[in-house]
Image (cartoon, rainbow, N blue to C red; front, top):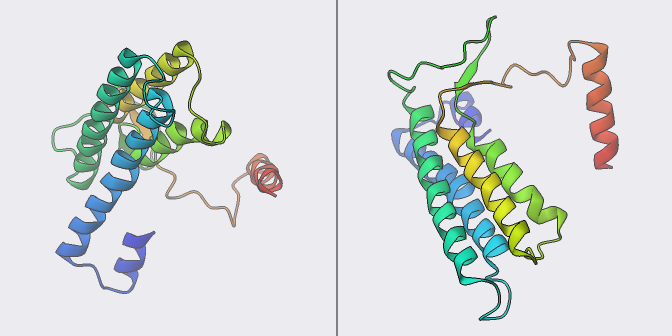
Length: 174
């Protein structure tokens, strides 16, 4: 949204573009990684609680997440160069190569929200959560195509089913 507004007001600058990329890396790379490390690694618990191996693994997955998010954002910013999606999809439209960082970060932190921020209590739960994070990080750097939602119109739904989904989603939020 910030980039759209900057272009609309014709206020886009090279510095603004670079700062926007840095803000995206912090928001969708570093912040979810820190939250996930605390959530799965037990750092929110008192000192000494939780297995050390899980904390080390959580830190390694978090570092991998930040690297994958940085790579994904750089590929998006610079157009991907020679990146050709490896799962061709028929039809036109806008596509991303690799899972965008915003939905990946959203999926990573929604689990934390569902538990009201309480750290995972078992090693098994922590390992499953870390496996999910590693999978999401890997999807960010794949060459698979993901449909862009830029042309999604909530004002003019394309089908009655789309309108129903929007209404049910809004009702769920209320």
